[in-house]
Length: 273
Image 1: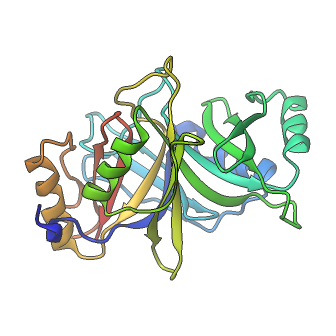
Image 2: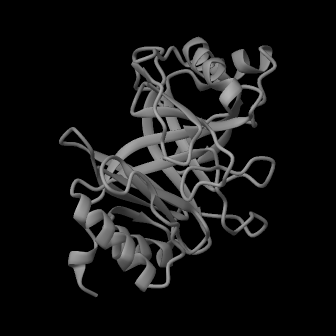
């Protein structure tokens, strides 16, 4: 394989697909329960096929995106009312049990607290009436009561096979292989905008877990710095037989995006300008 076809991917945060009428409510929910703030708000169409669009930036590279359209867009969409994605966006808190209890008292749906990768504890929560699933992770080393970014957890059928796939097609590097002992591997990509790295937990799914393509509302985004490399990478994935969407956005000038699916149907978004 010609490695030149796989450009450097920079993790650029996450997009949360939000229903139009719920957009402001989701931002208020994140402010109330996570202490996040509104960084920037734009009435911007993600795709020329949109009739209307709006985007809100909040903490840690998180964008809320909503649109009204009378057609199915090639890239900007999410499925609702189906199975949950096996991609979990994790955030660290210092008092996990306290957070869990507070959310339960507010009648917010939460999972039980469970042990997970990284030898720490987690619970899943479903934000707002849309049921946007996010995951909180215990980090007792934190001194503040903030909700801070962690890693992205990706559930797969076979950890070793998935690790090789991510290395080959996304340029991920392995940091720590705990697959034989704890059923996961820690991998990394560069972060966009700052000279740091993002971390990805590739974890073994249970036998009964759903394996298949899912277009969840919470979607991690990777950035390619050069537009030409973006289109070349898109064609490379297609040539390799990887299920890849058409390019959405503004093809002549402006932001462009597409997504593809790994061996287990986990969705990854790619964008460039």
